[in-house]
Amino acid sequence: HPVVIPPGETAAGEVNLAPILVTVRDASDEPVVGEAVVALVEDPAGCQQSEYMMGFTDDQGQVKSGLPFGRWTLRSDSHEVSANLAANYEEYPITLSIGGPA
Image (tube, rainbow, N blue to C red; front, side):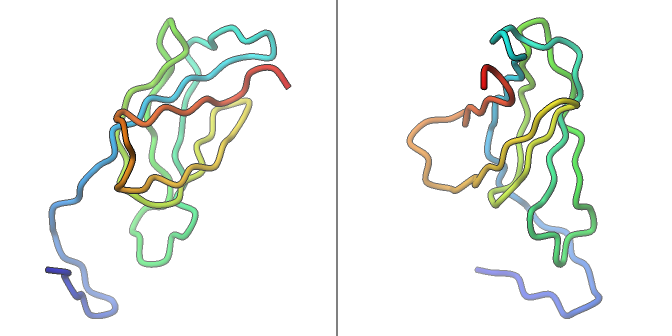
């Protein structure tokens, strides 16, 4: 059942997260190591936070994390991509790339 929260009040509840794998690549299609990846809520109305630090890319240029379903902008230091994380994906984790050859 949906939870209804009166305006100005907060409540704790369980939130399903979409497993996500983000790969950051440079213009030569090489992985970018050690770069921060941040997720920004595209519609922050009602959110206590609108920006979430997902982590830093590993030696393969990847960050593995999870986000609530919805519309997000994923941003690294050099690029960004828009993502609509829906609950009906065929396969998880959801894989997205930021950057790469133009």
